[in-house]
Length: 120
Image 1: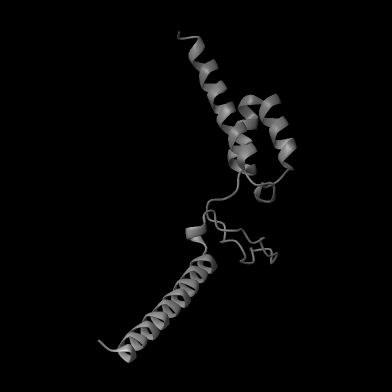
Image 2 (image 1 turned 120 degrees about the horizontal axis):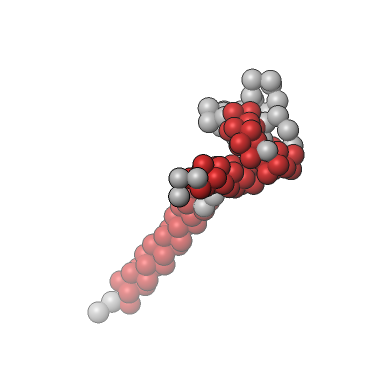
C-alpha cells in the first residue's frame, strides 16, 4: 500500500484538476486555451496539475460579471442560475400579482355595490 499511495495521490490530483478544468467556463481560463490545459494535465500529471492550479485556473478574486477587468475588457454578463435569483423575474411576479389583486378587489367592490342596490 505504501508504494501505491503516491500513485493514488497523483491520480486523484489529476482527476480533480481535469474536472476543474472541464467545468471552468472557457472565457475564465487563464494562459492557454481550455483544450490545451486538458492535454497538459493529462500528459504531464504532476507538472500539469500544479501549472493548472497556479497559472490556468480562474482567480477567486475576479470582478463580478459585467465589470471591467484590470485590462479594461468587460467581462460577459451571466444570467442568474434560478428564477428566484433573477430580480426582473421577481419584479414581474410582484407586478402581475398586484394587478390581479387590484382586479379582484374591483370585482368584489362591484359585487358589494350591486348587492347593496338590490336591498334585503
